[in-house]
Length: 110
Image (cartoon, rainbow, N blue to C red; front, side, top):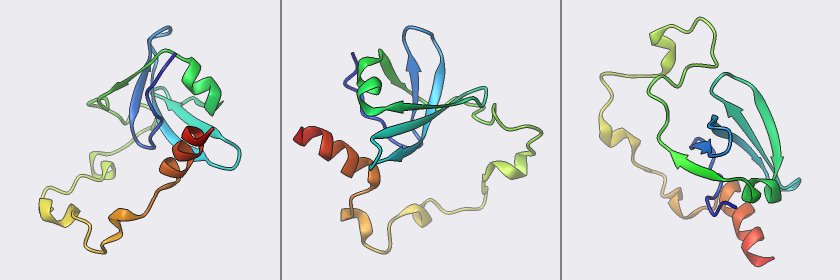
């Protein structure tokens, strides 16, 4: 069983299969998690099934573009001239709960 929470954009490894995948969507209403394996295959899991899996959080693969065909380096979204300070939250929205937070909070209340 896993105690690792699903977070969109984070990568995980299924300990039983060795497959690496990224959480790409959470549906709070349906209590489902959509994952995408490194090879591009998509799978939908219900939240209970997620917590029954043996999962480890891992770092994103160095070449995370595996599922994308014929991608140019320019398409990866890297901006060499970008200042790190631009990543800060200037809107003050950091206290807002995301869908992941809502989904996980609902689970904690059960």
